[in-house]
Length: 202
Image (cartoon, rainbow, N blue to C red; front, side, top):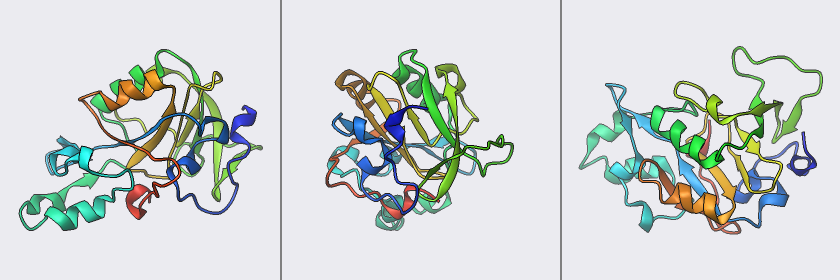
């Protein structure tokens, strides 16, 4: 574990997008990478099928999206969030974002099958275990770690438990890569202004 994670609060609750990445990464450009939903046939559904993302702020709340469009598109009420479990396309996009770099990750210890540790990392009232993460571990059917960062100061992400999205901070080339990727949905974060909505996590 590196010192870059130590300043993240052990208790309390994150509000601003930048609260979910270590302070040493907060000067970097950021996006909110929106994780998809599933319909009744387990088809992956992107937020952009229901909302024009380039007209939205990173504080976008999925619950508000549902309330906004359900009269004309009632099927939106049947969509189920993936709650942090990756689909094939999002996993591939995240693998590309890592650019082959191994990162340190933090995973919540409350998930079934999580290993025990005598030295958990406490963030916002929850306990996590630290472990290295290689790009190939980001694959469909697996849950994305709640926190991750590299040792070079070029990439970090953070989120809540059972998230609907990730806050990603990275070097300009990495952020341009994910924001321009047509396979996934993302919104540029204004680090000092964008407040994450209640739908951000469980």
